Image 1: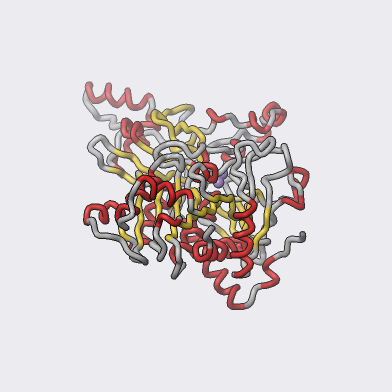
Image 2: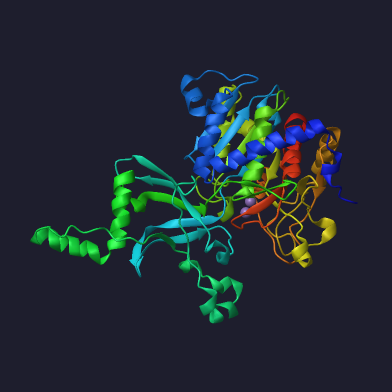
Amino acid sequence: MEKKNIWETYSAGQLKELEALNQSYREFLDNGKTERECVDAIVNTVEAQGYRELDGLIREGKPLKKGDKVYSVWMNKSIILFRIGEKPLEEGINILGAHIDSPRLDVKQNPLYEDGGFAYLDTHYYGGVKKYQWVALPLAIHGVMVKKDGTTVELNVGENEDDPVFFVSDLLIHLAGEQMEKKAAKVIEGEALDLIIGNKPLVIDKKAGKKEEKDEKEKAREGVKAGVLEILKNTYGVEEEDFISAELEIVPAGKAREAGFDRSMILAYGQDDRVCAFTSLQAMLDVKESERTACCILVDKEEIGSVGATGMRSRFFENAVAELLNLTGEYSELALRRCLAKSCMLSSDVSAGFDPAFASCFEKKNASFLGCGMVFNKFTGSRGKSGSNDANAEYLAHLRKILDEKKVCYQTAELGKVDVGGGGTIAYVLALYGMNVIDSGVAVLNMHAPWEATSKADVYEAYRGYMAFLEGAAL
Ligand code: MN
Ligand code: MN
């Protein structure tokens, strides 16, 4: 079976639609570099389209009916959307799922220190990263600091052209003889990924009295750190102690860009998995009619095992479905179980795009190629499919029919050659309910690097595929 490049088949009208979609995609990436920012942006978008918050609907106790649109946010980091269909929920719903967390450097809880005239923030990396990729490039700080009185201060520094940026240093090549002999995993160690955030000491008032003089001397000992703290206090009203209750994420600075002379690709941070989150969301918003209730879940914490209250393994999704059943007057424990078991899901995540520069890590017949359409991974996992949700053949046949009817271009793939490596997604979590789940998504080059590449055509086909799924899946 040959994979065909989809670009050759587009009409002028389709190309226009493709470009418009990718333009919105780039904006989505620029406005959401953290899970919190994604949730904020999504809430704004869906509210403008008539979605109502689940908690408010529960308080009102007004029954839901066909066509009603509902959203539920969990701890500002995960979001679920529902659009009520014609059929009872008990007959199952169609679910699109993706994750909105991405690999990055997280700031520790006691992070601030000074050394050699620099002020630093100590970090712990989040998700799987090649640490050597995160040095000597402009970085931005995004996140929140929550003060003891409960007020939340939002930070987003490094994205505007006149913002300062931050960086992790690397050793100059002239002195790197020993470093260059090390294994790539050891060239830059995790504990060395500390962010340089300042180099100018606080200016001391020389005329101060005895007591003040002592205080100032104390400050001068770590003058650069004191200088940074002064700026944080003046700009954000925060103290050093507020780092204790902060979630600050260090990400590559800069906007998503078109790549190639032909502008056929997108190069951007965080496309794993915001490329699937965006296309799933867009399909959810654009689908007009569906017999079954449509659902879109965009979750946090996939990159560290779907754990925690905002990860897919948390009960917040099941709870939201239970509340929904209650509001449509269908709730019982049995109805909930039936609804979940009879649902269909596309668990969407990025796939490893074939890279000619590293061809030996792929098996070409079963690799995904950029520009060849949305990807289905029947299974993921590693070492004998371990840890994978291996989708049912009957389900795949059903999906083939739906996609072919809508002329969606798709390909099947595995994550690399057998025994070369592997990876996981959220698919296995939903499969616990007994529902039909398959891994699908978009092929990416340089996955988990600060800048990842996708094909605009694949973004478009994934969107079209998700639309077809929401409209047509029923197994
Ligand atoms: Mn992913
Ligand atoms: Mn990932």
